[in-house]
Amino acid sequence: MARQHVPKTEHIDRLGKLFPLRDRYILLHLLLGLAALTGGATALIWLTQSLHFISMIVQHGLSLLAFLHLTSLMLPSFITVILPVTCFLVILWVYQRLDNDRELTILQTTGLSPLRLACPGLLCASLATLIGYGLSLWGAPLAYHHFHRYELEIRNRAAAFLLEEGVFTPISKSMTVYIRERRSDDSFGGIMIEDNRVPATPVTILAEDGLTEPHGDMLRLILHNGSRQTLNRQTGELSTLLFQLETLDFGSPHGQALSPDVAELTMTQLFHPQSDLPIHTRNKLLIEGWTRLTGPLACLAYGMIGLLCVLRGRFSRHGSFIRPTVAVLSVVGLMILSLMLKNLAERNPALVPLLWLEVLLPIVVGGGLFLRDATRHYRLSPVSFPASR
Image (cartoon, rainbow, N blue to C red; front, side):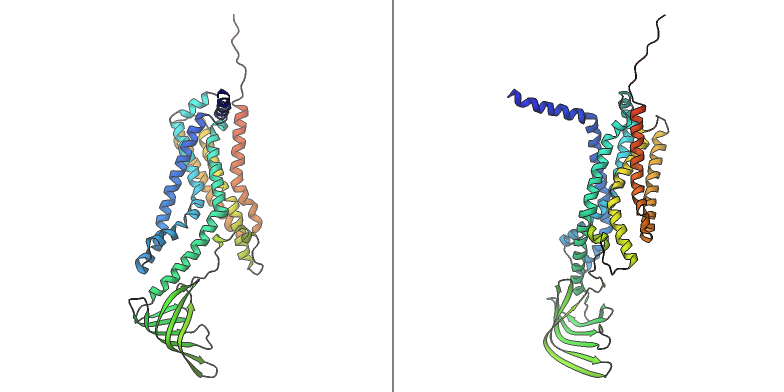
C-alpha cells in the first residue's frame, strides 16, 4: 500500500514545483473575475440587443421560449467581441490590487522576476485566446447561421399576423393583399391579391376564404373557391381562371432574403469565395477570414499590456493611477488602430500583414522585456563582505 502512495506524492510535489500555491491563488482570482466580468458584460449586451425582438412577442404572440432561443443564438458573437477587453480588464484589476496590497512587493523581495509573476496572467490570457479561437472559427458562425434561419422563419410566420381585415397590406414591392374579415381560427374571408411580380402580365386573385402556413423559408397562402385574372399588357387580353384550391408562396414583408451573411460563412467560404462576386465583396470576405484568425490573439496582446504596466516599474505613490491609465489608453489605441486597418485592408488586401503586426507586436515586445528583466535584474550574484581590519 505504501508503494502506491509514493507516485501520487511525487506527482503532487512536481505539480507544486511547476505551479506553486501563489500562482494558483492568482490564477483562481483571474479566472473567477474573467467569468464574472464576461458573463455580466454579455448579459448586458444581450439585454440591450434583445429589446429589438420584444415587438415579436407583444405584436405577434410568440412564446417566451422562442424569444429565448432566438436571442441566445447571439451570445457566441457577443463573447467573441468582448472577451479580449474583459481579459485585459481582469488582468489589470487583479494585478493592480495585488500591487496596492503590497503582495507583489513581497513576492519580488523573494527573488521572483516579473516574468515569473506574470505566468498566471499569461496562462489566463492563453486560455481566453483558445476560447476565442473556438468561438471565432466555429461557435459564432454556426450560432449566427441558426440565428439567421430561425429569425427568417419567425418573421415569415409573423407575416400572417400582419394581414389586417379591411386593410390593403403590402406583402412586398410587387404584391398587395386585402382581406375582408379575419376569423377566430386564423383563417381569412374575402381575399383579394394584386400580384405584379411579372409587370408584363399582372395578376388579380379573388377568393372566398383562405389561410396561411409556413413553407420552408417562404409563407404559403392557401386559397379556396376563387378566380385568377391575368392581364396581357401587350395585347390587352384578360383571361380568367376559376379554381377551387390555389396556393401562393411569397416571402416576408420585411424583404429579408435567405442569402447567407458574412458572419455565418465558414473559413473555406471566406478564403475561397465564388468567382462571380465583385472584387469589393471578395476583399470583404477575405478580410473577415483574416480577422477571425487575428482577433482572438488580442486577448494575449491586451493581457500582455496590462502585465507590463503593472509589473514593470518601480513603486510610486502615483503609480496606481498613472500605469492603469496608460494601459487603458494603449488598449483603446490598439482597438481604434485595428478598426482602421480592417477598413483599409478591405480596399487594399496587401495591408493584411498589418493586422497580424498589430496583435503580435505587443506580445513579442512584452515577452522580450520580461525575458530581459529575468536575465539581467534577477540573476543571482555572489555576496561580498567587507574586508576585516
